[in-house]
Length: 154
Image 1 (tube, rainbow, N blue to C red):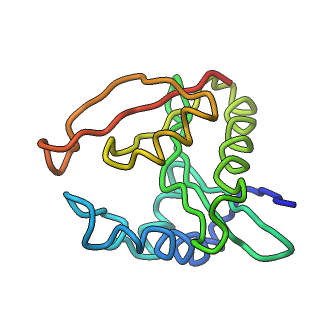
Image 2 (cartoon, rainbow, N blue to C red; image 1 turned 45 degrees about the vertical axis):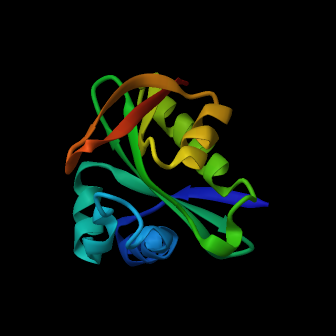
């Protein structure tokens, strides 16, 4: 069974480790390259200053993470990460369900994620979870590539 908890600032190294492991498959594949590969533990720690993170646990082992940042009208969720050996077991779904509940505790009625359109399986996951397209736009570091912002009312 998956349990999801809010991370603390002390968990920044763990959140970073999970994110790096989860995004490794995209190294040398994505254009433009993912900025996750340049992030440090200190960068993750700084992200806690304006938001936070959630950790997914199975049997005492941290197997997934996601960062979030509150905005006036929604909770932005990013860097959703599941360790490769744990994919396909509902970890990302559990994280998103937990963060939908967290958004409600913050009196926010929508959660959003941004996904590259080229990552069709990730887009499909969020659509299965009930997300709809808010907008499509050029990727900020490569305007020839597109991202989609997906939202879900909570």
